[in-house]
Amino acid sequence: MTTGVARTTAVTGKNGIDPAEMRVISLLLVAAFVAILNETTMAIAIPDLNAALGIPPESGQWLTSAFLLTMAVVIPTTGYILQRFTTRQVFLASMAAFSVGTALCLLAPGFSVLLVGRVVQAAGTGIMLPLLTTTMMNVVPPHSRGRMMGRVGLVISLAPAIGPTMSGLVLDSLSWRWLFGIVLPIALIALGLGAKWMTNLGETTDSPIDVPSILLSALAFGGIVYGLSQFGKAPSEGAAGGTSNALVWVALVGGLVALGLFVWRQSHLQKRDGALLDLRVFTSPTYTFSVIIMAVVALSMFGTFALLPLFLQTVVDLSATESGLVLLPGSLLMGVLAPAIGRICDARGPRVLLVPGTMMIAAAMFVYSTVGTGTPTWTLVLVQTVMSIGLAASFTPIFSASLGSLDRHLYSHGSAALNTLQQVGGAAGTALLIAVYSAALHSGEAQGLPVADSGASGARTAFLVAALITVVSVVLAFFVRKPADKEAEALTV
Image (cartoon, rainbow, N blue to C red):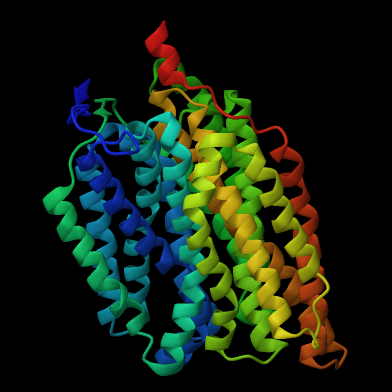
């Protein structure tokens, strides 16, 4: 075993964290925020890009589909990557990939280069959040993890919420290239600071990588996410027709078969600690419940972020900027609440936050299922704000309880599995809500109904389906317990 820079205990800050380690965490938080922010800016931008580049909708949608597909392939491998390579190596590689991809998108002369840039961006983004959460678990003492995981929860919920707002403002006043032009300098600064300040935390191993596991992982998670992303498209977006529908089902079924083979192979390899993704993380009930809740919450969050702007622009007739601003108050409130939520999680455990948090998300989804053409905008702002509070109250305990229930050597695998299922849940939510909405919209068009009326009906049905699924997270929240302090137990043995 090769060790990185050992954790120093000579000087610690008020959270029991060495200042140098705190600087690394702060840098990772900024990098993760920028990378995840980039994830949701494209949803509103696709129509503008289609027009500017002169491409059909089915081609433009690949700018989001390819991004999701790459993320789905990369994230499951991070359990191995974070054990095999040092913190510094992984950070610089992922941030360099993100920066190069962003530069390609900014300077792209046409669709092909833009698509390549999005794929390279996603390769860097997919590594960043698992790197952040694994690093935190390795250096933050258990009694301070809620507070620090609150910052992770802020990143994972605030960045996607701000993305559509920023995108709308940019598209209504500037060229689409500024979506990347604003992000690139921040990414380059983070890369430069990382080259200067990033140190190696934790340990590395020399385990050989299992190539068949990588191939099965790519086919499994890539096929599932691709199938879900295509399944959620309206017929006019290129997912209709016998051939396209057949490809969607081939991707989904093939992905599920590959997933079964992937699980079988990991179960065999983990007996000698050679798994690409160690599935022993699921032997912890708290971890398993938390991961399921994360997938359901991601379904609700990303599904809402995808459908709500469509509803606001198609039914309520708001502009892209106005649609993005509906999400803004809740996003800002999440930032204000993050420190308090982290302190509560440390003091009282995850359940006191997770139960009301999931209830608020479910309640918001049920209210959304009653929207119509006459729903006041202020009502939507209020509902989205309630949902944002629920998201903020849920993410911190999910991260803290899930990873805190694992042994230290499983942190990287637990983070990889958690983020993978979050990605799958987000893709499923987007596909489900958009598919239900599109079906109602086109059914109404066939009957000669106004677009606003059929769109409102489709949105109500889609949100109701999501609300019913979200009830699962409320039930499971009661079973999530505060993890035992494994490090303290180890010291007393």
